[in-house]
Length: 177
Image (cartoon, rainbow, N blue to C red; front, side):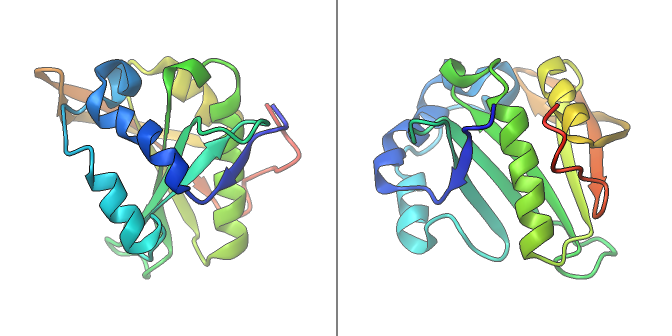
């Protein structure tokens, strides 16, 4: 999927973004965390456009420029120099899943972060049952490091997760999976 781009979140994206907190089907079984304030995304957008030093989002846009979802990154410091380690994530609306958009968006995000920051290590966490995300991370070149036993609570029970990493120099931007 070569026609995917990452771009800043636009005001016209905010209604679609609100679907993630107002529609359980939009978040899907691995991202839905319950109903939340649908105006919070607008407030954050008005504050800093979802781009700051601690936690940022970019819109995932297929070839037509529409809003397909978001990629995100946040600082993780425990032992690493500030900016040396980021946790990355992705959330796509259901109508954009299963077409390679997520894999391409994650590859673009990794390339962007390695090109524009001093980050050394990217980490991604996913539910142990989220096979599609595991395949996407594998295609991008992330290494599966291990299981996080009962790492988060979702859908009425504690869930196991997996942690993946990608180090500076491991991303092959020419490999589109």
